[in-house]
Length: 296
Ligand code: TUI
Image 1 (cartoon, rainbow, N blue to C red):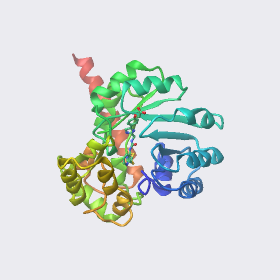
Image 2 (cartoon, rainbow, N blue to C red):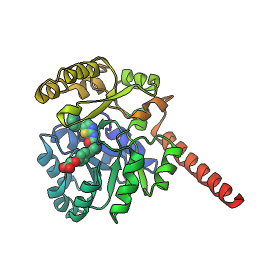
Image 3 (cartoon, rainbow, N blue to C red):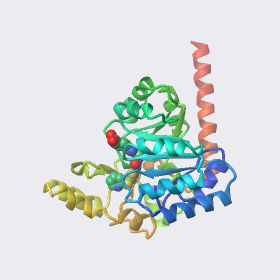
């Protein structure tokens, strides 16, 4: 997400052995280029950029990504079909996020390199299916590698995703609690305090459902939807609210997009420590499962 996944966090994740992804969101192309250049100064490891396809700047952002020859581009909230070839022509791997088997199949025909299957547990824009039913269905439908996303927080989630057939995991919410994550400290405080039922999906009637932390803004959304307000009126309520939450720290009337795993966040940690914990826990669980299998 723009304003959330910025160069310092991206570089820290890539330096620790993950693949950091800059969020372009609805930000202008100049912002995205600046983030890419900063990340290049902070790491010599590969990193990527996520393009939100509903952004008004999408064409200009794609041109920046081609100019900067980024290693990986992930896309969200749409079908990136026409951008696949121009990005691949400069050596970029294209990995779209999908929320359905139908889009997964269509994108494979566009020649994409891998897919991210993202379940409804995730934060921000969400599809209908949970991660548990979505991932194995996408894995069965396509021959490219599938990365699981949505509801994954730790080594337990990572092993579960691999059991579903995923080759890797994407985690967003967990890294909002990273020391290097640029979001306002008030947002981090809300995430540490969040409990299991503290997120809600708003904007269902607009066709663009978004999972956020419950607050005064989410209640305004719910009231408008209860009154069957026009989709344009509902969408207008969300304009600029991600930035006001993440940058200005308006946790009451800002859009605090976060996944259901926010309830599992206990502390603020360096990104490298988060990655080490997840990988160590996943290894330990796999060892335990193997021991159990040998005994039986
Ligand atoms: O895109 C995201 N997460 C986002 S985007 C965003 S900004 C936004 N704000 C208001 C309304 C909509 C977006 C905040 N968080 N994640 C990846 C993702 N992509 N999740 C779900 C999808 C998705 C859903 C439907 C991708 C494609 C799709 O189908 C489109 C089609 O053409 O079939």
